Image 1 (cartoon, one colour):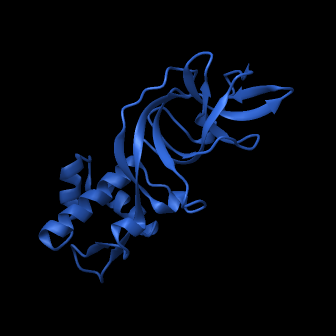
Image 2 (spheres, one colour; image 1 turned 60 degrees about the horizontal axis):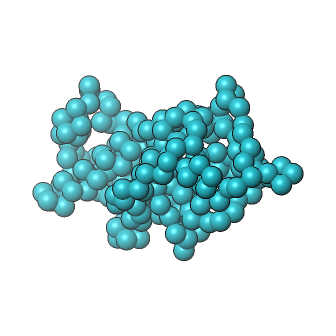
Length: 202
């Protein structure tokens, strides 16, 4: 399961509240903390966390939510949000590292890899489930297979972009995942990483 940004915030609140008070917050307290319109919204996020295996409920008592077993180190990986990347066209790289924690399940396929995160601006990758404001998780690597989503550095423009990558007769074809936008070609492209997950801005 991929956590949304809001679900991650709810989980962090439950963990911190439980550690401080010895019991979990009520749905009403979760509602108040995040300004949800109704308790049902808090219940929705808690249910998603339980379905994803991030929370257990002990019996049928109130305030019986507990984070699933395993240490924080075992369940979470700290990486750095390195800035913004355009999914609608190349922009200059922005570097302002900020630590964030992601579920280790997002990087289970290659747990020893090096990872970082970028916040997406633009809508050219919406057909791949990547929307404006989402955060993509990237594994550092210098090549990807045709059709994979990658962070590409364009030295001639001193810019980075997020696109699907294809090789085409000595050039690199950078393809948006948006039927209203056209692909473009570059001859000088440095792959900086492969997109392996998304934290949705919901």
